[in-house]
Image 1: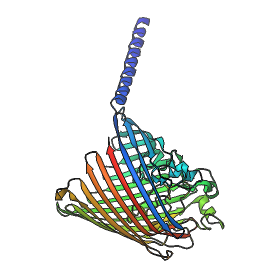
Image 2: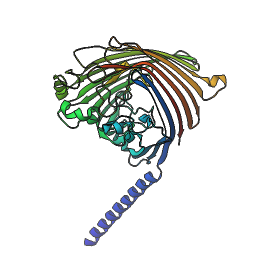
Image 3: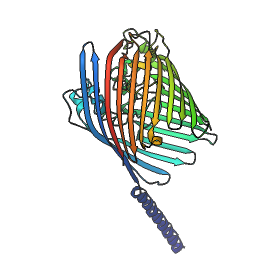
Image 4: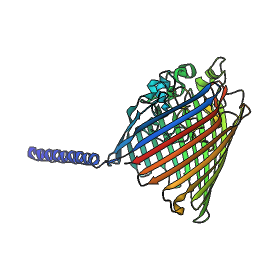
Length: 453
């Protein structure tokens, strides 16, 4: 009897050991069979401004990029880490830090071009675990994400990233339901993750929210059919702000040569809890105004053979009794009239959430037209050009803002090169209290070479 029990225990122990060895072997195999990807990017930027107070020119060179390692699958799990770096060189006396460490300088209370912002940095920008089984998927950790109001903003050298978790269920009828919890944000020119609400409000965080930190909990419902797609996202941040984003996209293919798409979007923002009370008090950073923003836009795009033509209109409603400009502190630039520079690009710097630019200022009407031509059909494979122009008008502006953008691009395999020219007249910006200022002339030129590994 004792002998039989000993044999049973021995067999069980041997089976458990083999199972553990197999699991370890499977896990080791998943790590060993992972994939490496990434990019090496060179970026040159030159920004020239003409103001009544004087002219200024700043430029910078930087080389950097990302290196990502993703493990193979183990029990439906994968792990991903991404190393990010930006390393400037040949800098002038007046440096454009928007491809280096601009946010580092702003967070330190210095001017954006301060020496702090001129220093390169490296960071573990992503470190997350993902799980996918059937119609369910999940990720948790540091991750680069792309949503309308919290975005990677990849137009600069490095992307922005968040820290949190996200779970999603995909239904068979095309409906997706996603829920997330985000507590930290790393702006693209920052060397560290900061609490997501404190990043938005900086030194005013406690005065506005009653706390030193906060979270954002987005809930997304989307549906995609053969021609139609609908998306609604509610970004809720207790004691700060609730933002609802919704869009509808319709696509129709008339023939192999001709297709068109039409889209509508709306954004609704309101301060909530302590922020709603504190911002409404006299002497607050918004001049005693709680957040109440209503915006919408429409876009039509026509594609014919190798060309695309689009037109868009946006409107942010005016309400003098409230802070009526869009609040976009996490690199979201969602409006269809968004341009390369006139796009709230720096309102995602530390503590700058309550300012706004151009199309995003309360009361602004925006119109944008764009034309894209692929030259492959003319024998110049890989070459394309994009031309766009926008007008932003507001009765609070002294003059209408006009933007012109030109992009000449070349792509061959893993290599892409872009030459960008940006010309802005009367660029408008609004401070947290709604005060409007305009820059008479801004010219910017960029050279971007990117090689995917």
